[in-house]
Amino acid sequence: MNQMVINGVNSQTFVAANIRRTEKFYTDALGLKVVKRTVHHLDERLPVVTFGFPGFPGEPARGETITYIEWNPIFYMMPEKGFVDPEATHRGVSSPRVGDPKGRWGAGTNHHLALHVPDRNGLLKWKRRLTDLGVHVTGPYNRHYFHAIYLRDPDGAIIEIATSEPGFGHDEAVLGSGFRAQPKENLIGGRDELSVAAETWPEPVESITPHFALRGFHHITSISGNAERTEKFFVETVGLRLIKKTDYLDEKGGTHFYYACDDNLSPGSVLTFFGLPGYKSGRLGTGLSHHFTLQVENDAALKHEHGRLQRLGIDVSGIQNSLYSTLFHFRDPDGHICALSTPSNYATDEDADRLGEKLCLSEELEKDRTAIERHIAYRPAPVPTLEN
Ligand SMILES: [Fe+2]
Image (cartoon, rainbow, N blue to C red; front, top):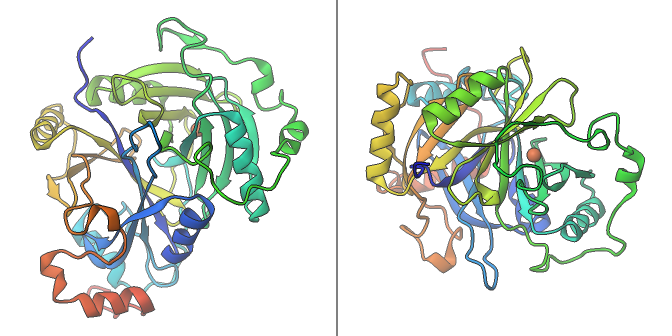
């Protein structure tokens, strides 16, 4: 089998209505750390905070990051097609239209991000800790390849925490070799929901110990209105490896396909799609992921993939230099925004051991620092522009 050019998942980007509330949730409740504070590269009025995972003795820290962009919930309407285009982004941020910027998942959007703990005891500790903090948690569910609990971020985006045990290999010798039907007791309607809801860690869990601290990503799950079309796209065009075809456990008639984004099948590098035939489209907005980003090794590999996708007729954006990586965007057949990026280096403009302490701005924006900081602090109403 050919070596994959894509070598992992880089990040997932969400939209928040109040980035300070999001930061408090990720740092205080989930124990992640801020690794960058900056502004969106398409419009400096949009604050951006990126969270990373701590390292552990004996294990290298995983490099995946979660980024949140704040979208003013009162004044700004999200551009119809999402902000990947500078013009559409500026129009959206400049246009004072009262509306509901809330996202809604559907075909062509993300469904959830799963973070990773090693074992089921860790999962139960998270359930107890988060429940005691007032976060509603469901599960632990047996997902056949892992065990999982579910919660929501402060805007309603679904976050899962999943175990590495028992893994993808226990029900087929060759991963992705055929459809694996799920046992009835794992499926909706066949589970004992009351017993699941009642199970938790017996003691309060006030601090996060290395045993159950979040290790990185487990998988990212999005929704496809046509599972076969999505499979063809991600395997034949993007170049991922199909590792599991099975049932969607929470909706009768749905499928769940898993794809590996690197050669060693590590938990952080898995994309999955619920196949819900003919499902209604979603809408980007707060409480939903905006896009996920896959990773290649360096600039040369990125350029190579950009050219290759273009030659295959995929509509790709130009290659952009953000401050911390080089990337381009494309869409899957349902319209989901995806990006391909070089590895992020957040230590280019602040010390590696003091990441996230200051607002980092590009050289061109540095002269506007005071205005940008004031805008982020006070979030004033936008000034109407002529095109309204
Ligand atoms: Fe999941």
